[in-house]
Amino acid sequence: MADKISDPKQSKGKQTVTLTDNSTGKTCELPIMQGTAGPRVVDVRRLYAETGFFTYDPGFTSTGSCDSAITYIDGDEGILMHRGYAIEDLAGKSSFMEVCYLLLHGELPTKKQRSEFERTITYHTMLHEQMLNLYRGFRRDSHPMAIMVGVVGALSAFYHDSTDISDPHQRMVASHRMIAKMPTIAAMAYKYSVGQPFVYPRNDLNYAENFLYMTFAVPCEEFKVRPAVARAMDRIFILHADHEQNASTSTVRIAGSSGANPFACIAAGIASLWGPAHGGANEAVLQMLHEIGSKDKIPEFLARAKDRNDPFRLMGFGHRVYKNYDPRAAVLRESCHEVLEDLGVRDDPLLDLAMELERIALEDPYFVEKKLFPNVDFYSGIILQAMGFPTSMFTVLFALARTVGWVAQWQEMIEDPHHRISRPRQLYTGLDKRPFVPISNRG
Ligand code: SDX
Image 1 (cartoon, protein in one colour):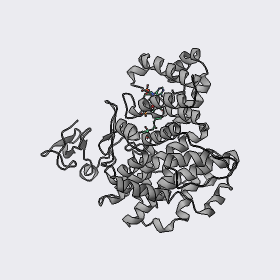
Image 2 (cartoon, protein in one colour):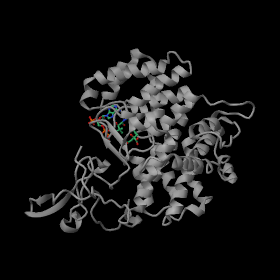
Image 3 (tube, helix red, strand yellow):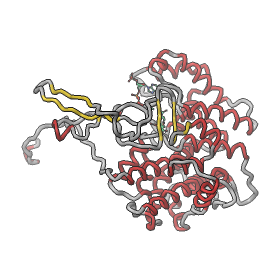
């Protein structure tokens, strides 16, 4: 990892690159910036003004959209850190509430700070009672993610007192509200889909316990949260909390760059996360495993995944950044065994199938050559299904956990005095100017 330098955004000395337009011989010298770790960047902010050129990078495979101090990923080494702490340490030794505090404030909380933060979140878990009416506007068979997009976006209609993004206090209140209310909104989306009454949050339960209680308790009998399941839920939230500038986080940042209110920005992030190439992959993994059905079918599906003419992809494999094992998948695979054991599930055919699929895929030259490893979504669905969640709730849980990452990244952007509206350009490939043709002459 690069040596730490005093001001991460300033390169050591004056490092530059020079671009030469070979058709004119004109050159342009651009500064190089070096962060605390990771690849150096070429600062192209002056490129268009000085050369008339745009850069071109659809999908942003080689583009840094911002500088951030929240999360660092080294895809080659399989490293994920939040504010400098390795994900393995956070997942194994911390709690989701501590990680939320860390992402928002940059440091792990002291005991006093942690209890104050937990109390703040606890006392924001209830929803405005009138919001419950929104659920009744949806069909019972609506996908819960459709409900999440709608209800989270509607928060801005109920919490006007935390939508002034120029006020740091209101920004933090909005962030606390979203972290606190997402479990309530998510649990209610589930209850609505199964026709059961909503269960209100309880202030005597911790974050993960409360979510499990609101999701699975019914008024007719006492509900006891299994400690091992609550611990696994908390760990799953930690593993999904933030992940640098992924598609949904970039969506939140772009939406926020226009000055949109925080609730609308998070609703945009939820919409982006829903895609099967992103957060929707955990649901797609379970559907794929059910489609494969048995180990003897694995070669057939691997062949389809390798066939460029077949749109089928091995869901839960591959990653834009990780070209090594996703460290989150490793932790989740361990959690799988713990949860299934606690639930008395001796041999889960889906887990057996998933592990055999992983074993075969990781020996297959196609996957080895393209560095396609299991990602965070490969194992999460198996645990969530064992916990009793329907596949339609898997991405909802991802959105619940990622909310803290979204709001932390959104705050970081708003607090940057140099932030501007995000407005990329393009390479125009359409028709050149042509005369208008009146309809009488259009044949
Ligand atoms: C998440 O960005 C993040 O950080 C996201 C995330 C987070 O925490 O926010 O980590 C969460 O979204 C994890 C990813 C979940 N998605 C899936 O599991 C869906 C399956 N994976 C693929 O769709 C794909 O791997 C992506 C979308 C994840 C990455 O796509 P890229 O980086 O654009 O890579 P690519 O599609 O260009 O693939 C490169 C090559 C291609 O082959 P060639 O065209 O070069 O011949 O690898 C092949 C692809 O066909 N490939 C796969 C594959 N993934 C890539 N082939 C078969 N199965 C796959 N899963």
